[in-house]
Length: 560
Image (cartoon, rainbow, N blue to C red):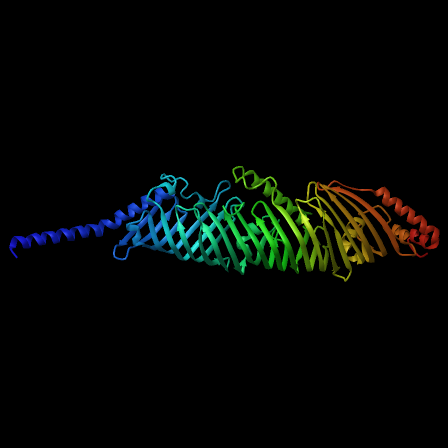
């Protein structure tokens, strides 16, 4: 070979080397910029990629640090990934990808106070218009795999602290088509609140849709507390929840999120705003649950095992149940004020509609404590068994309930009645018990009568009717063998209480009274004392006529 020819080949080789070097150095940069621009135009939101490389021999591309969205917390973050392109892309329209693998993807979901989920806006502002009409821009992905991912969701509509996170997420999705409206099929698993979650079914991004079979095991109830307690005046302190049903969201549901299936709760404990115990249970099983956020909660059957409800009057005279419900109403009013732009699928004015077809309690406990009295008054009713049926806020039919239990001293207690949650609220309750030891209520007698109680029992038949904000009561009380002890406070009453009680019960040792009470929720209470006094006068006259000696001894205050 001549020297001229040799030099020519050396020059060609050098040129090839330079071109390859330029491709090696500038190719990834140019490919990265092209990918960034293409995805930004397609998704309608900024996309940043640290680096993209392409291997033409295997038709695979690798990328690192992909971020979709603005701000310090973008919508999507992916540490790295690999894309395998089908060779058919060379002669067919659009892009055909056989497999995508994503390492450590993070998905940040935000539901604003009004408007759609942030993920649902992807592609909505795309400058390319309708993806299906953009010639040659169709995208098909046969399989998407992700490992060690994380998904967190912040629901600002429910509350600023309403958020949930899933870690260690792995998923597999099939048949993604950008120019079609068919969602992908697949399955996913991960960890939520220390428990396991499995999902399988249909999922789509544009438009956002999900119709997934969901199973959870031993998930901490605190992880989903903002949604579990959406209709409860309580905060979850501990507990675990299991789900087995169908989860729907996006276009697959008529609400932001909906669930149908079974819910199980274990070792649940709730507290009020003052961190005082409110409601707890060993286990709760809810069958036939139909839940749509901000719309309705329907339950076919619910069984609570060993529930405990604590009613507490604190040192300042505040009742925990009424205070908690009042706080809940104020919170709902504040939340409703921020929902003017919410979806038309939700009826915020109507609130959450509740329906319980059957509600059963097994071995329940009711604890009452009045710390406003000194010493403290405490009443414990345990062994509660009973049920409530056909409770429905949307029906005019009243729900019926009956519960039987035992007071701590072995006295049987029965509570029954009906309740209609319509407008206005209408509820009736009848409580009966026999041989209830009055020593438990001694602080009340001591405070308002000025005496200790040495002995005495009561048979009670208490009838309450709550209609709207007005409560009326007809309480039939039979006091037996009531003995007052030492006088503690001479200023508590100007009445000769011992003498009057002795006169009323005389030889039989029985005082029989009907006490009518009328009150409103604002504390305006009226007791018809004329009727009580007339009963007392009538009974006293009867005792004087039937037992004149005993009555006179009681009136004089001694046996002499």
